[in-house]
Image (cartoon, rainbow, N blue to C red):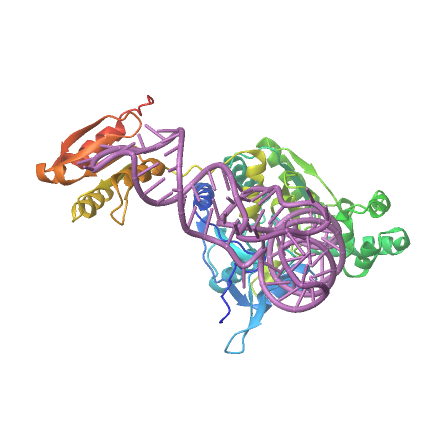
Length: 426
RNA sequence: GUGGCCGUAGCUCAGGUGGUUAGAGCGUCAGGUUGUGGCCCUGAAGGCCGGGGGUUCGAGUCCCCUCGGUCACCCCA
């Protein structure tokens, strides 16, 4: 006996099917609309890049060093599936040199080889924006406000905006050195896993969850003290702008993000709806050195990414952004066979209506059941009687009223009927 | 990558201490109404009990391995 195949979606991936996928369509439409109104255009770039594109941006990060899906293609090129959305856009900017400020948005899968759990997948999806070519703090404010507007448009309310400022790459390096020296002297008091980070990534120790470490950190040197005057002014202007828009932000000097390229403004929208482990809904920041690292001229940039699965999970937790798919306008029931249903359904659709029908010559009762389940407002019945008389029976599913309409007038009649306020009786 | 918990029809689940043909609700299909949905009634289909190995006269129930999910760590969206 041959083994029966038993294929499943790969570990850490999932199929999104109707009706759940209706929420994806809606979410994407919300994001696309907001991006357009903010002056951002869509960018579509490859799902994989030369692995160097990603290695350049995160030499010390887990996302790049441990979690990448990389492989050699048949031509011997070492490529990687994108683990995040910013680097490919930055690479495209360097390649094409569009005029600045270049404001773009994307919706993309992202791949990371990690241990999956709810809200953390090996293939997840993000919507995001990037704005390249301006260091104006007002742009930071615009990007953050766009993130806020998006979450609110989904109906989310129970989230908070957390901010930090890293300063210039030089500020950041200086602070990392100071912090590292300070932590070295106290490595015995830190949690063991945190102590191991001191040499490689001292900044990572900052957002530790371990109580021992947090106690030590209480009087560690602050990042804010390491910033130069211009960096301080940038941060202040961002905070003023957010305030002018009525956006409450909480400054957290221990906020550190997983990609190493951030400078100046760093931000996250967090929700505790999913528990601590997956609290970040949307995160981003400025990356003023990134374009240069990818071979372009020194060019500032800022952006964010938002995880779609996580956003939807958070919507569930808050009981918002439900998945009511738009109902059908008309369902065609056919008991006579022949071309009547084929042609009528086409005509309804051509007239701009959402129309569907039953197949497989099912009984009228079964077809009516399907019509009811479809949520259609009206049913158009074509049977022997109608075909003989050159008419169609049009039934209003909510009221149960029905009548004969001349075949030539059906689409007009149904359109007019749909324009009437919906019956609520019976 | 490490550790805990879980894995029975499409879905949600029930199946004391191992014992004959593995059950329910919902969903699906058909009939009750030979051209009329929702409610109701009747019936049917649908299970390598995640997979493999072992213990046993006998395993959905016990043991081992494995795959998947989930939670925590880690990391992050």
